[in-house]
Image (spheres, rainbow over the protein chains, first blue to last red):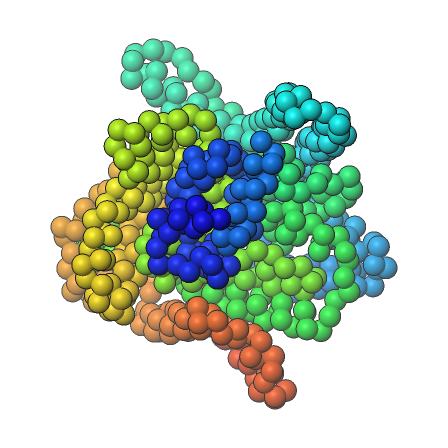
Length: 76
Length: 529
């Protein structure tokens, strides 16, 4: 989780990721930011994000992103 | 029988509401489906076989993919991880063939009936350029109403099943109703299966609240359509047809008038559509969120024709961005030119097809392709100059946070959008460029008050009425932006005041609507796309 928060801070440092649960709904992260995030996640956690994973529920909060990463790690 | 006509509003809709309500609950979805096919038939006659064909294709493809996924889940139980991986690869490849087959069939029909002649004409012209005789003959294809909208819905269904977002539906009737809900047929909104299918199928009884709230929204949509958009139609048509006769100031007025017309016409129609669905207890996705309060063009497209933008993002932008070759390209560029360089390259690769398809989706015309490419260039420019704008915001934090700067951004975006709509409405890109050049080099504000203005069919009463009506729409938009739900406020008014509001809307449409002598009934613009 620490590593994920670092990645998120780098993409947009002005957000409180520990509390924010509307990263997508409030357009805090736009589609370009999401793509940068996905690229970083794939490098850092050796996972593969598919277009089907690109839904708001997976990116609205740091916790949701972390859950998605864990799920993708399990799926290998 | 378009949505703003008396035939629809005073005959078809009340009749469907009545039959729907008196039928037992389990037959209500069938009433909606029959109404959908009757509505479709009224425009396209027996071309409704296209719609049924598309429904069969998506239904069958969805079921096939779903069956493969379920069988895989069964097979993988007790298997080793490496074996599961190999099996998954094989199953995914098979699923992809089914998805590709379904999508090619659906998009293929759209491509042939809508774009074949455009392709044939341009190919023939290209061959002539190289002095080669021949080419392709043009063929007259009849185009079913709403094909550009329902095809996208069908594609989204198949892909969503493939991606595991939804399970395929075994109930053919529910799939058919998702495709043929009559308020959506002409102009969308382009809904996803999980957004509407279940609500449409439940056959909920009509309620006073749903019907009155829906009726309010319909009246508001009619106000935008017949008081503003239709009144502007004459002046817009004249300026864009005889653009060579006019001063740059009048052409600029024409571009602003067209943008105003298009917004009020399309968003007004969406109000009628969403209000109609609301009467049946169905919530359709919104297509507009105050687009003219956007601070840049990317934001504008998140607020204008929202469901088309979202479709392009989910089914073109993300799949292209996350495809193997774009990822490789991005990684290689990152190594050589850093993160910003990679962002430029990946964005260009993914945004080009998005904006090409966005332009082409509107119709087989070079002006629409030019329109798409115009936004591609604008958005790419924003990405290329991102470090500069970021530095500017950092150095001038006070200015960037100032309300005046926000107003500047909104005005700048609006000007860019108006220029885009000028190209969209112009007969072709060349004519659009001529008009823009005329605006930039031959602009005399005095022309607005000279004789030709009166000849445009816009007298002082029309002008005042349009300004007042647009001001009302703008204020309502501002209130929405601030989270004020006007219809819910009206609902809480004391009964006399509430009914006064209803009568004001009805009378507003009756008195100020552009119909009768001197006005022609204006077709819905987006129904032709």
